[in-house]
Structures are given as structure tokens and as C-alpha cells.
Length: 149
Image: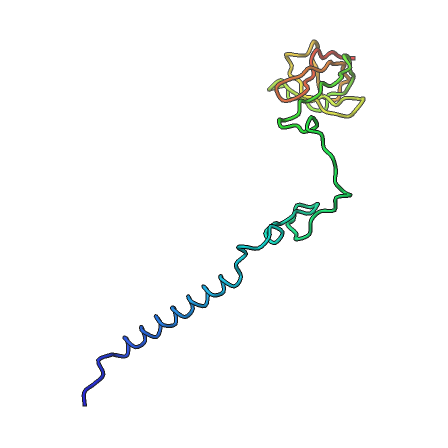
């Protein structure tokens, strides 16, 4: 008797191919049975709830909020100008005499403002009471025209 023309490896490859064909046919049938084509628009639409999560149920029309188009701002809102009192009083919280800068703590609101010695009328040291004015600098409000009290 003669041997079979197929080897063990060939038989295994044929089995794998047949298994893949069957799996592919099963996936095709599954796609056909779960197809949403031909169904109504209600079956394909998804809604968003108040938190932005998708949901199946439409929103409640009684909780609808009307927004006017003029209220929508597309750009960055402009910063409002601060109403600044011209003369303020405070205390020098920190001063570096080698570099010529420091910080003044405002007596009214407790905010700290940067100052440079070039903006000072008098020589200042730490813990001295001073009077100053505020101006807009490149990084915020800056103390200028500093004088001892």
C-alpha cells in the first residue's frame, strides 16, 4: 500500500484554513443580523445628558435653557481695569540691597507688590513704613514713587 500524499503539516494547515473560513462566515452572519440599516432615525440617534454623557433617552423639554447668541463669547474676555487708589501705605516685607529690588506689603489688603530701587524716592530698608503708588507693570501691579512715612 502506498502512503497518503498529505503530510501531517499539510493536514493541520488545511484544518486551520477551514476554521478561519467558518469564523469569517460566522462574523459575516453576525454583522448581517445586527445591521442598523433600514431602521428608523430614532434607533441611530444618541443624546447627551446634562453632564455631556451619551444616553438613549431624549432630554426633557421642560428643562431647556434659552441662550441668546449675543451672550456667547468666542474670544478671551477683556480684563476689566482695576480702580486703583493713587496713594497707598504699607511695609517693606523684603528688600535685596545688592540687586535693588524688594516687595511691599499693602496695609489695606495685605497684597505684596514688587518694587525696584529706581522707583524709590528715599532709601528703604526692610520693615520700614512707606507710602507708594501702583502702576501696571509687565507682570502685574508694581509699586512706584516710594517714600518713607
